[in-house]
Image (cartoon, rainbow, N blue to C red; front, side, top):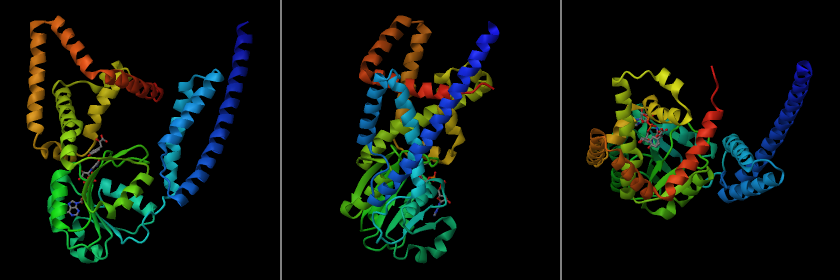
Length: 379
Ligand SMILES: NC(=O)C1=CN([C@@H]2O[C@H](COP(=O)(O)OP(=O)(O)OC[C@H]3O[C@@H](n4cnc5c(N)ncnc54)[C@H](O)[C@@H]3O)[C@@H](O)[C@H]2O)C=CC1
Ligand SMILES: O=C(O)C(=O)Cc1ccc(O)cc1
């Protein structure tokens, strides 16, 4: 009997292997079709990410899946993963050049991490890119001559100084920066160059295969009409543009970046001081706890100077960190008093304040955790 079952199991597994191979052929066919779409998008200058088409397509596939007795979330997850691959593969085709007549794009700090990413994107879109890094200032005159766009992508604490050091640029040259803070660089650019000026903040690190669905914050400076093409170019790369004033941006970044990175720094310092055994903690961690450790740990895989600048160059960070410490001390008093009832009452009040966002965050993080769990392998 046991032998019959094991033969049957083997046979079923062989059939599953066959189905998986069919899936592979289907994937190959789909990737080929996507490449053809990529060529047409390139010719027509269509953004690589089309949110409405994507949402409508996913909705249809979910409905069809339900009719076929396939869990709709399964097809949605699969298609999202497949589409991510397709977005990345559009780099192979390149992107339509929205402004072929513009002069060279000069990237100051172009040998750095973000500068390298943007120089690739401009080159893939057919622009002539020139790099000016630290050691290239003696050749600045030749590098900037006839520039159509100047991108400043140097460390935050060097940005204003570098902008002030720029030579006189052609009248119509677009001057922009990619700095993580916006008010000081934008003011310095407006003072240095009488022509078109815009501040950009890419809300992502340099290790991306595609800008699809990534956010770039746009802080308008001057003569928007003359750099509208450039914003369109960034949309073609797949990014979503979010417009804000430089002051609004810097205020939001206090919480989105400065405080978040500062609390991660403190938590990292605490783990170190407690001599936490990270290996052991990971053994105990299910995906949510692993993700939390990863959020803290990834900070320390990156550039201390970048995060130091983000935290220290924002004038409000000290006040905000003090407020945070006050909240911590208040909450500590609950612990000292052993006042669990008050803890629960405050918990409910905070949950009410989060409102629908709490549900939304639970469901979003739920999906992330499922996919983090899929990627785990036992060693
Ligand atoms: N790395 C990231 O994840 C992100 C960085 N940013 C912003 O991008 C900018 C650049 O950051 P990263 O590329 O990470 O830094 P990075 O340190 O990798 O690159 C900076 C580049 O600037 C060059 N540089 C320094 N001083 C210079 C000078 N006086 N003249 C010419 N070049 C000079 C350096 O040699 C280096 O090649 C920063 O303002 C940062 O806030 C924005 C979003 C994400
Ligand atoms: O990858 C990460 O953890 C980041 O936080 C990337 C990043 C760094 C600096 C920025 O101004 C924006 C994004």
